[in-house]
Amino acid sequence: MLQRIISALVLAPLVLLIVWAGQPWTTIVVAAAVVISVREISCIFAAAGHHPRRTSYVAALGFLAAAVLDRYSAIDLAGVALAGAVLLTLVAELARADRSDSLRSWALTLAGAVYAGWLLCYFILLRDLSAPPLRSHPLSALAIEPGAAWVYLVFAVTWASDTGAYFAGRALGRHHMAPQLSPKKTWEGFAGGLLASVGAGIGMVPLLGLPVSLLAGALLGLLGGIFGTLGDLAESLLKRQAGVKDSGALIPGHGGLLDRIDSMLFTGPVLYYAILLLTS
Image 1 (cartoon, helix red, strand yellow):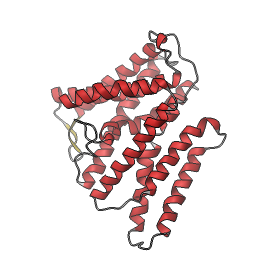
Image 2 (cartoon, one colour; image 1 turned 120 degrees about the horizontal axis):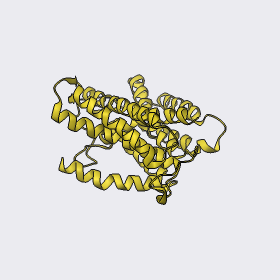
Image 3 (spheres, helix red, strand yellow; image 1 turned 135 degrees about the vertical axis):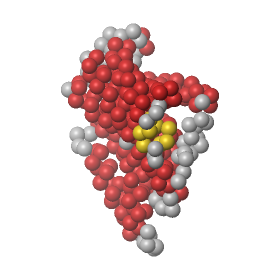
């Protein structure tokens, strides 16, 4: 726990500052996260005896490029990136001399790029949101841009869900949620996490001047709590299938990067589209 707290106290302010600074810093950090995450998911697959190809990195960075260039394009660059990823990873298998494991290798190469690349790139799209403008709020002197405020909302509800679930689970946990995937998760912890994420969603609306109602903030918090938990369980499923405990050892007290951002891989895309609907 001490290692987890120290890591959070060091990394969280740094990430918040980078998001506040905008481009190109946010893109650089997301690009680094994509590369590290692809490496970690590839290692998880390799631990299960599968062999994803290095083209997974290229495909994942293609999703990143599509997200960065999205604001300048009139066409669906995400579709272009996905088509390119499918073509690239399949053509790479055609070029191999040994094709005995091509089906699984291609499928996992593409899956790793989508999971660790495409899902992370939604934080680029969130950071690029510029409308509608923020309302007056207590932190106006910090000159927070709308995109940064929305990223902070996603962080807040995801972190609140994780923290609330941890402490509620330790204090009240009796009924296991998914014992084969995550033995320590309980329904009581899940309920505590939902309450915390809804509270964070409501609180961030006036704190950052988000251009939505308190009810919309509660809805965003609820979605974040639900899908953040599903993201955590999804990564646990992959690790259990491969027989590994952590995705890596990059962050003291947390494990790998994926162990820290697994919830955000789900909350980022879901809340991005929810925000678009609520502000349109």
